[in-house]
Image (cartoon, rainbow over all chains, first blue to last red; front, side, top):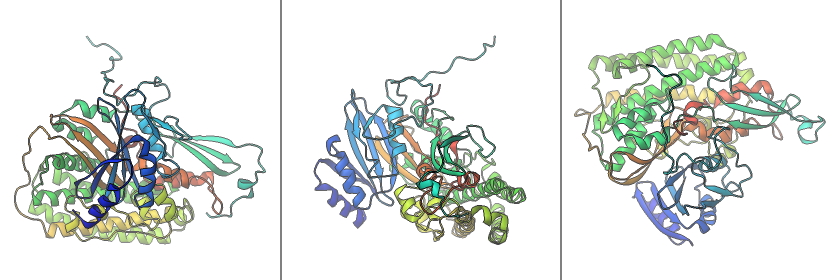
Length: 153
Length: 384
């Protein structure tokens, strides 16, 4: 555990809306926040030097969609938010982090997380003829092998 | 070329903007992608990037396969940087097990990763020269890639898809004869990189097409979260190997190459200098190669954990996220490739602003300068 990790941990601990925070391995901190305080928490992190967007990962846990936002250059803080399974909605942070719009569109495409207040939510990953409301990375989606174009006897 | 911004960009004298599509099939693109350029006269004033033409459903496919099968799937996310992908995957699984690999395996992995970086940068150099219209340079650089591929073949058994990194270590030993051969090849590479540097710095046709083209300021790359050589060529010393060391990079001395200019020219020079730096790393590893085993056997079932691994792939920071649940298949596997992270920076480069104008003819060199790889960029969709 480096001194910087512990310092960051203390910094995050006292924030409002933080449910849980722990160092999972060297240079990796996971902070669980409520969806309501997600935006203010990300804003605080961006101002504290965590403005490099590593990625957004969406996970369908079975009892909701978990959105993990990874921020930082050396030490990476993962902001973890659990959204309701029926109406997963999250505030956009596109005005705070300019590198983020593509990731927000991706998590919307693949897991159906509705991003509120993002100016451009057009598709980035799925093709134009993909049906509306079908989200391939949800657990309920089962992929199947395509039919062969021509049957060989 | 940095001609002054046309007055039309601010106060328009043109009646309407035109959309010019580049792609999905276009001679300047090696892979399908669609760039819809908004042009005002000869100047590009906006761009929409569509990368959704290569749907391969990789992330979903990871959930259906065992950890051993997934190793070979990870390798196929990207052909050119396959070493970086297998390394990241192996590191993720090993971190979930909380086990280290033997010291000799760490250095062998490192050697292969740097060889992969060199061959990827040489490919890119050729492609960039081709986009500029300098095909002789393209032939030269691809010829110099062959000795590197020969080394990779002798070390791993394959030229491109190496299957060298496996969970817990590496697959093959390295022979003393090959160590010697590598040293000689690195000396040869040093000569060639010096020649390339001289050529790029003196050849007018390269400089005229790249200097002052596609400028990104340090503020731009930081705010766009750009990665890799794209970021370093704008004077920001961000390298995962140094910032977030993995797989033994904290034990190897090396310099993070940066260039102050931030244009396409700087990105060429930065990559050439990085090749020389990689050669130094390989020499160091060969000199300090530890003895001992090359493989630790790990159980097939992986304990539950959330693991985020970042690796400096040739194109920049590569990030894999693994959530395991104690079974022999991952619960969720996420791959974020460097090209995807560089898309906002690409859009920024392709937009004329205040002091700098982007001509339509500048688009291919700008596009090439981020070293785009759309196949790995759009890998995540479902298997249809």
